[in-house]
Length: 94
Image 1 (cartoon, one colour):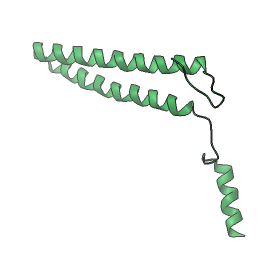
Image 2 (cartoon, helix red, strand yellow):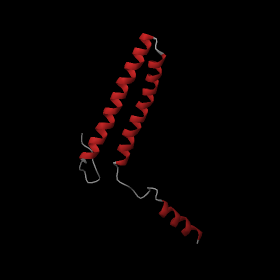
Image 3 (cartoon, helix red, strand yellow):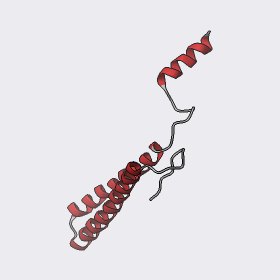
Image 4 (tube, one colour):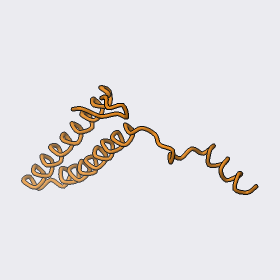
């Protein structure tokens, strides 16, 4: 999996992080489906609730993937920096 940086190169550690996040999401999907199916077949409320809990893990894993993807992007001039914000606000007052 190639990840492009500003220079057009890939970052191997970023690729590993993305693959790990995708693998975590896939594992959460499989576990969720298995627990929900087992809970439905056995009538176990505990397994159904565990399946619902795992469904939340899918969202967390997906959020992690998107956070990694955004973190791989280079910083731009619009990035929030508290110190710069304070200086810009004080410059507006003068």
